Length: 130
Image (tube, rainbow, N blue to C red):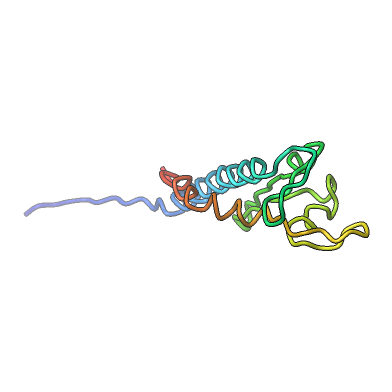
């Protein structure tokens, strides 16, 4: 007769913890990448681009206002221009709204930037859980 003793360990909490950590690191890196694409989309020159093309910034303030933040609890992030730095001006550029008495022509930068970055986001999750 063969006698055997088997011991098991419950590693599920450890795996879940590592998965959440890997997920947040991936979100953080992907958000940084999208922010970089958004910043590079905005031009820095004195004259505006034609309607339909991304906006430009004379001072570069619009480019530096693009920030991102990641939330651990929701495992999500938000990327876009800081209201404290540029107010509603970038919203007016993105959607073609009225701002300070002038009607802005739509010069979207966020939507096209996300579309451009989307195909390259999947690799940020590769190997996230180890």
